[in-house]
Amino acid sequence: MKKIKFVLAFLFALALYSCVDTEERIVINADESGTYALTIDLGKLIELANQMMPDSARAGKPKEKKDSTIYFKNFIDTAQNLTAEEKALYREGYLHIDMDEANNKMKVEMGCPFKNNNQLIFISSNTSH
Image 1: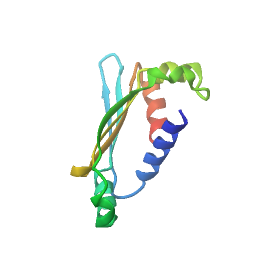
Image 2: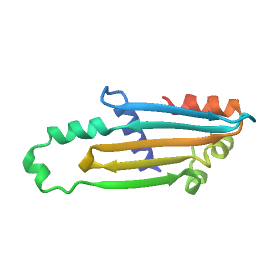
Image 3: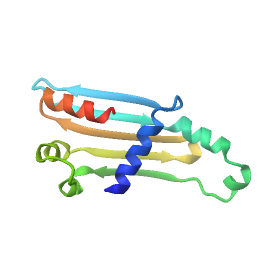
């Protein structure tokens, strides 16, 4: 849990730089349920990091390629700093990381379904900070 918090904090800190693009998507159904997703594109940052790395360091290092999804339901019950309502709300949430260093691609998407507008407001206000 601490590793995930660190990774999320690091990614949000990177979002402050101009070489990071963010996209917020909200889909609202007729019954006021829907999905909220925040996508952070770190491709320009990967490209910048690769340009700053000396050729000698790049030569021995293989380019990483990862595509991973972490579902919050697998560990949400162990979170000690969330209320029961927050655990219920974020249980179906996910974190998806798609990285391809060779092509300067890295996207991180966090998403969560919601059942009504109040949940949407809560999710969006806690995700965008």
